[in-house]
Figure 1 (tube, rainbow, N blue to C red):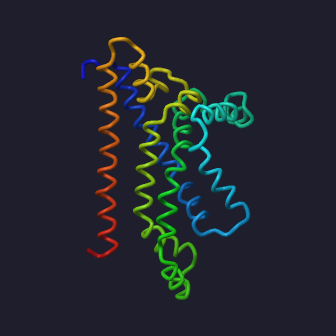
Figure 2 (figure 1 turned 30 degrees about the vertical axis):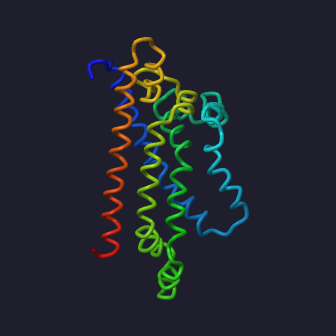
Figure 3 (figure 1 turned 180 degrees about the vertical axis):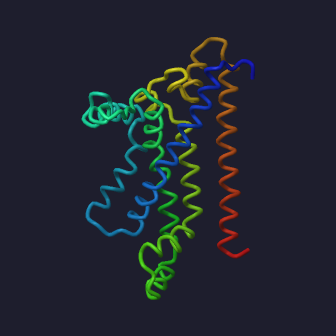
Length: 230
């Protein structure tokens, strides 16, 4: 591990910070988007579905460049935000935003599938008993869709942790500021003789992702057992 530089460790910690922030910020929007796609009946639903999945088919660099155009200091959204002190471009918050955009479709899908798997009769029974929409959402939809929420959170975290193209385009790779783990791996690969350093960084990324999946599986099993009263 001595082959790693302080900048490498800073990149690991920054990636954890970026991935966590991206996952937490995206989760509420991912849930309500999934809810709308699973149960909603409205004009433009197909368009919304297509927009949600657009980051999956666009090159990540294109997504990062679009964010840079919109949210750069001189962009149509970035300029007014900069006037009140909110800056995303070339800042760690920009890396988190880019990672969140790329991870968003992978968060929405498992949540949507979990909501669609809920038996409609359960919700209808609660409705006949006078339960209001917010109560049904809190007492029925959220608990029954919990495994999907957990899966979406893990998928979002893992994707944000490994995001490269969009983050480097929108936030660059400033050591200690916006240099994330995937970028550190890429830079190590470009340096002759630094193959072992790149392997160690890859091993760290793998260990973090594996730990996230194991924790997710454990939490999912606990939620399912609790729901069944086991």
